[in-house]
Length: 198
Image 1 (spheres, rainbow, N blue to C red):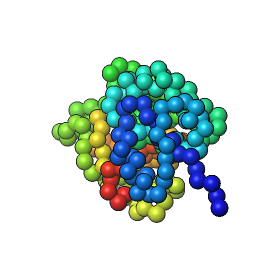
Image 2: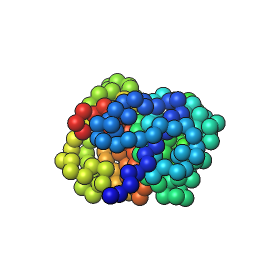
Image 3: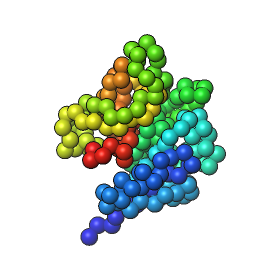
Image 4: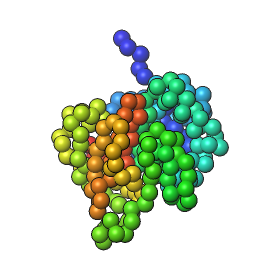
């Protein structure tokens, strides 16, 4: 009988913790919620949820030494991490939200706001279910069709540029990165915990 993996959901005061925990509970997982850097370093897998300002979220991670714990777990110990919404954006190099702010640097791309020209009259924030084009070679979307609907709430995005790994794409006036996976780094701009059966 194999030992159950220790999943830690990072609590830094900016996340949609209860929705994520409900989804994990439904899937039969028993994660720990923690804001303790030691717990994060010891985790087998990390979930970084988030809603709100990139700048404030990164400041909180830094002030609590959670950024260094996450980097140690992911870069040195090669633990898996899943970022959701703002948590996904924080995996990137930087964001222009509330001024230029450095991210965790796991995804070599910047996070920027949608601009009015590319939106072509669509409203911000981007809220609701939207179609996502899924890659064939994806462990994150194993068993899914090539296109599925997921629930989004965001005004900032990573563009679907050439990146290492496997990318899922959504279009909201412009193609943007809906999900990402490369080695032990996984992210979803959408909210899987609010996407019904998906």
